[in-house]
Length: 378
Image (cartoon, rainbow, N blue to C red; front, side):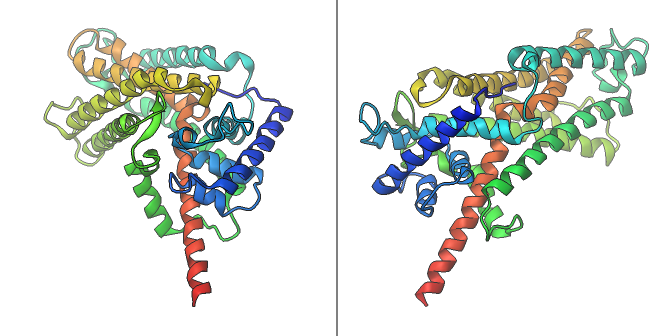
């Protein structure tokens, strides 16, 4: 789990410097064609806190603007938009996700460890109370031999609902801060464009040659890694959905055979997610640290490492489901899932949702801008 420790005076300084930097960028406009951040910036004469938060979350950290800019250090203008936007994103996640502040003892690796150990204890207690008498040594591969069906669904559902409630509350507050007067949350055309942008990672190509993320040289490696991770995660989600359909609609209970839809989607999705997370972890040390912050780097490593653990423990359950190690590996995997549900609103994972809202707001703005141009041209 991560949280910024910036004071109000530090945040005021960040936003003040943001207005200074973007005023220079608005006068230059050399990066206008690189990504939607710069056209969105040009549509604004002045920058409120909400404007800066919108632009920061619209930024995909491709860093092409930095490598192309003639006003970066050691120039006296000292422009560094990637780091500026990273600092603002950190504050956004911290300020809009409830609770705004968490106890110091529950931050970082310590807090994650506490949540994981509590999750293990809860699941062990659940197995003792609701599992079959021989649940600890079963090699049946049947999850409901280790846990009672309804009790397991209840625990996992509670944690998921809590996580969604916290995240949606934060997103609602963020949307209210960045929306413009003509923005509504029910623009179907804008949502369609937004989903296409997200699935294609359209804004992660910078100046068309790829992100200047690895040693400040353009490459598509970061985009490819993100696509593997995104579609892999989507595959595992669809595997869970297909398993639920088979169980509740078709009466087919787990474990599912190798040629079943849940098994195939889960394996393919898990492999893709592992490849994507590993790729991003490999290229992360090659990025210029001066264009980010220490806290965001820790958050990136924590998220990617957590997703790797999540996927690898899932594979472990699959490989050992017909052995006496099945109950232990199952509890390990479900504990990682339970931990993920409980902590992900306080992790870098929420950037997906904040960025989706920012992309949607930008698409709404573009529609309104084009409509005004057409009206004025008549």
